[in-house]
Length: 323
Image 1: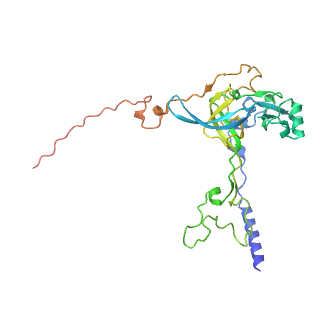
Image 2: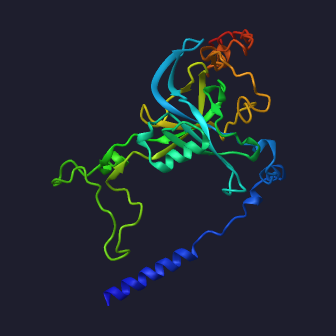
Image 3: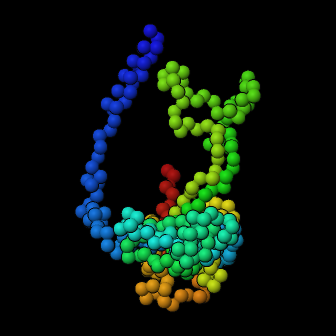
């Protein structure tokens, strides 16, 4: 009797939850006419062009002092012999992409199929291989070399890699749980996660429950990272701030989705008129001096200094005479 009632109660709850679902909203009704036309633009539109990125090695972190005397933390990325290994087209593979390879490996470290893949492309064996979706007009020939000059100082990039693995961890470190009470009868459960569900209804542990398990070693993307400095001679990129992953690991770098570059080398240096490859070190513009333009009282800013208000002399009224 109890089991039947519990089952019926569970079914009724499920039906009620489906009945309370919110109605679907037409997303096109939330956009204006100009925004809708931009979303429905043709595939060959200039604003929708996507070029390839590159594969780099995270070397570590350093810092520099900019022109205003501010300490800027930087992450150094090394572009280690990045080449095009394969060009995938929509006619053959079903989509347009460029397969890049970076680093190097000995022939005895790879299997026969991998050797044949690089041998057919006439490219040295690479340690890391990754794909980048591109526009049809941004395809690159096999063997084309991509250097650090692919990105310009001052532009923004998206960086993707794997976070540092931390092994099997408990709920307090993995999810930031506060743990059980430190006293009042707690025995050998101070760092436990507590309850993980109910008894008869639903009678199971929900998927995705925050519990102890593997922490780290996840694919993470950092968006809109500033390219502070580019050194084409040494194939180095200096990114402001930290970058995902451990030093010595490979990361994928491409143009930022939310802050695209203004006039990049499209599709890459050495093609379509972009022949003069830059060789000098370039640094991003530090912008206005933050010590002069920081937020504060308006009368403290030199650019928008307000004129001093004239102080009106108040007429002093004599005190009333005593009768």
